[in-house]
Length: 295
Image (cartoon, rainbow, N blue to C red; front, side):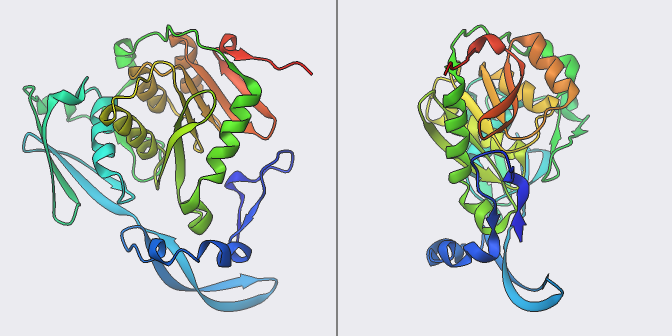
């Protein structure tokens, strides 16, 4: 099976053939025994006119129901990893908290499929009854709407980065996508500085990866107003808002943005880059932050 989410004949990335790569990645038996992440299923591979019965590695999809001050907010479909970071990032991205200190307690229950969140603020459920199903994978949903963009801050940081460094960072992101290489079933995002990736996270949903990145940064008290978000997934408007709320100046993807994503990025001064593959990329907004390398 060719994992062509990262395939591009004009760039430096290699297509990953899962069948050919099996022996390399399957050596980590401890990783593969994690039933929260993987399941092995018997399948039939049809290839070149022949059928072959084989075991296939499939990524796990789990529910996580979030309760805020005993009110059931929503259920997300997630990869069962970095869940505390996911919840913290989701609360921040949705505007439920502005600082991690506003969280009094987080308690996981029922085999990490339920989390009870206690906030110090007077949580008002009525504000969150209207939910928008997003264009994301993993049953993505949000309570944001574009009218709330006024809560987002204009990106004031004038940090610049060389174009070649963005290409290098995106190449490193793809090299780090271990779950994707094994299953083809995840998205990946990373937090980066100009020279290197600070950390990366995978999940079944592109929105989830972004929330997990934000949550980990808040837990570790990492300054975000000069950082870069790299991601494998399509960029939609609610992802732009999540990034703007944290004051992050760069959002770079291997995939395409939507029209609302581009318009919002332009309005709020975010540097938005799509189709970053090999040595080419589309800069949709914030071009002034990109240093064009001369030969």
